[in-house]
Image 1 (cartoon, rainbow, N blue to C red):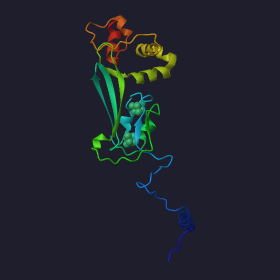
Image 2 (image 1 turned 90 degrees about the horizontal axis):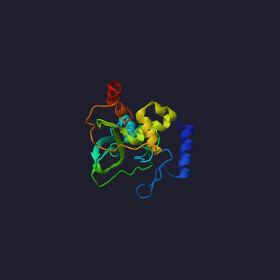
Image 3 (image 1 turned 120 degrees about the vertical axis):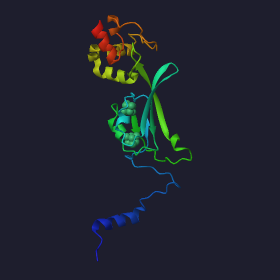
Image 4 (image 1 turned 90 degrees about the vertical axis):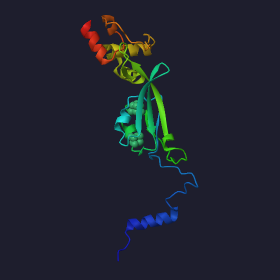
Length: 203
Ligand code: SF4
Ligand code: SF4
C-alpha cells in the first residue's frame, strides 16, 4: 500500500481549511489571476501599424489590409479572438510593447457568429510622393524618425517626417501620380525606395 506523501497531505489540509480551488463561475463573477493571459486588445495611440504581431502570431489570429478609403490610404489591423490562443507572442514582439496588450478578458462565448469576435484599428498609410506606392504607416515612420533623432537628417523622407511633426514642413497628401520625369528637386520628397533610387540616379 502506498502512503500519501507529506506534500499531498499538506495540500489536502489546506483545501479543507480554505475551501475548493475552483470558482463558481458562471454563477459568480470570476477574477483571473494577475498574470492571466486573456484576449489581446489593440491600443490606437501605441500601435504604429508595423504588422510585427501579424508576422509572429502562430494561430493566424491577426490580419491586416491596406486600402484606399475616402481619399486616404489606410491600414486596418484586425485581431480575431475566436482564433487567438492567448499565447502572448504579439505583445512580446510588439516594438512599442503597448500596441497590443493581453487583457484579463476570458468570456468569449457568444450567440453571435464567430466572425463577430474581433477588434480592429486603422492606421494612416504614407504613399510615395511620386509613384503613390505604399511606403509604411505614418506612425511607424514617425516612430523611427523620433528614435533616430538628429540621425534622421541623413534620410530625406525621415527628415521631412521629423520636420512635419514639428510643423516645419508641409505634407503632400494628394493621391495624384507624378507624371513627368523625376527631377533633382524630387529628392526632397517622401519617396519609396524605387523612386528614391531613380531620383538619385537620374538627377
Ligand atoms: S505596433 Fe505592435 S500592435 Fe501595432 S502592428 Fe506593430 S506589433 Fe502589432
Ligand atoms: S495572443 Fe498569440 S494567438 Fe493571440 S493574437 Fe497574440 S500572437 Fe496571436
